[in-house]
Amino acid sequence: MSTADVNPPDAGPFAVNPDDDNPYDLLGEDHDAGHRWAFGTGFTDPLEGVDTSVPDGLDPGALVRCCLALGDDALIYSHRLQQWVARLPELEEETAVANIALDLLGQARMLLSRAGGIVGQTEDQLAFFREEKEFRNVRLAEHADRDFAELAVRLLMFSTWRLALFELLSSGSTPASTGDPVLAAIAAKGVNELAYHRDYAASWVVRLGDGTALSHARTQAALDALWPFLGELFRPDPDALATVAGSTGPGSTAPGSTGDRAAFDAVLDTVLAAGGLDRPTAAPLAAVGGRTGRDGVHTEAMGYILAELQSVARAYPDATW
Amino acid sequence: MTDQSWPLYEVFLRGKRGLNHVHVGSLHAADAEMALHHARDLYTRRNEGVSIWVVRSSDITASSPSEKDPFFKPSGDKVYRHPTFYDIPDDVPHI
Image (tube, rainbow over all chains, first blue to last red; front, side, top):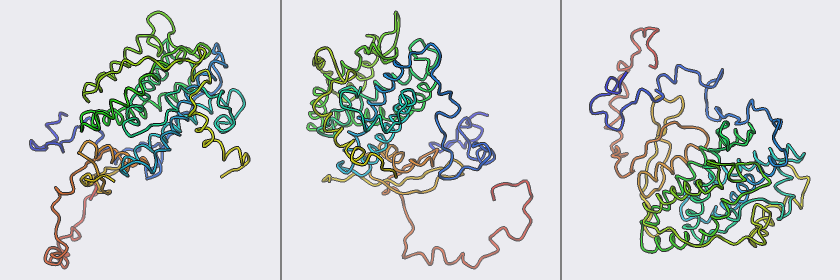
């Protein structure tokens, strides 16, 4: 059936595409296997039916380091976004940022659970009882946004990078994927979330860059300030699994190889061009003795984050809801 | 707060098993595209919707509360306008 068959000629934006889910068809079908949809139902467990044993031939230590890296990125970034709640100028933006923080917290929980399941710890033990030097997040995640422009620019950078990473991880058969089905399932769930985060951030970077003289200046300043953090995102992580480690060989598109940085820059350039912003040329933030966030070397902001994040759990280690 | 606040939009949502879009509330946004984003963030967080419409509140023409009686009272006693006086065939759905 073509679109013309079901729509009057003047249907305009209300035209029904027969390929879309048709509400009348939906009424007749039962999508949720056995029970009617209602508010509060229809939620699925992303790890349902996934074998959680570590696959043969996979180094458990490297898998743990990989999950901690990705999990800590999400946990610390989520905390930084949570700190914006009740400080944003519009209620609607506040909900949007809180939603993104919750998405990342959900990713952190699953990734830390995966790591904890292998080393015999719970997600809470990993989140609340590790020391600063044991956290593997990149330093971009711990940066404190000084204004809304930095929030938007930093989220654009982080979500663009992470989305590319999760797309690789979720495609189970590529050479760049880790071969861990749990990680692939977590990444597959995260891809839709991160695509929305990137969309949200990109729309704001364009709005602000193309807005008033003040919003343009602040957004360019945010770009200039945050650009040095990007180098670390593409550094090799030799002790973790290939995907976070960087290049996995000739022709690899894994994050960390120069080819992937080029793809990242291409996305950024598209957004910056739409917003009338200039790509900075600032040098990457220096490593400390060759070590960066992935090695547990963080900026001074990290201590304050952990103090806030961990103090209650450490004061009442046995507390439950 | 912003000096010049964003305009108000009304949000209509079609649920997974809904036949039509239902008004669920309103929000502030700078333009229609942002209103869609905001609607997604405010009104579909609990897995409610599969389709969203937004429309500027100022674009809605509403019936006036003071004219409620002349508008609606005349149909209050016309029971014969309901399809209650004949049998509905079994194979006609959604009535």
